[in-house]
Image 1 (cartoon, chains in turn orange, purple, red):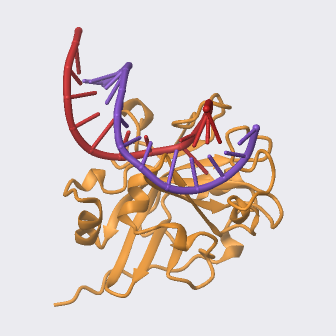
Image 2: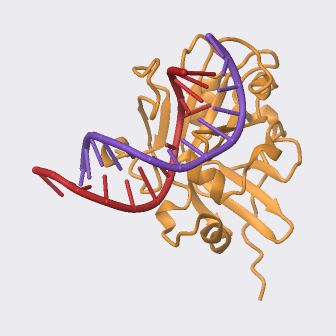
Length: 203
DNA sequence: TATGCGATATTCT
DNA sequence: GAATATCGCATAG
């Protein structure tokens, strides 16, 4: 008996705030979906970080390069890059075309395709499937082939409306950076066990 | 719980 | 050649 999964409505670009920090907050509770030939991977976004203009921690701090080009696309495009020689990171561009800003997706609560995520991650611990940006990309089979795709344009990797309302949203400093470490640009669903970082970073 | 470390590829200096 | 938006494992307390 094949599961039909739940209905998830695709978000339209018009629904995305035209401001990266607002988008980072907006995306908490929304859905990330990757439709693959053998099934769907989906989950609730529970943790994000914003990277904005003038931010030394942003990949666009020194302007447009071949790598960061997707961040300069109209809001809602994917920027996927390879980090620390091991992991892919998935970002959503957050501004009007020509402005290089984005939102890093840091953690997801798995909803659909869990068995496949377990295989992708070589772990059966539900909490660890997509808790952290590198794990998230691995669970969702996101790699550089998806760099630059439109997440609100009808493709296989897309943003959907929330299947359950977001809880209270917490704000904190970002994780894993050295520059601009004081800025409060990390957003998360408070109390969620699917959020990365230490316990204090989930409260 | 917290800290430390190695692995590893790509980008930019 | 240095830096890096990480992870998983090890060890200590």
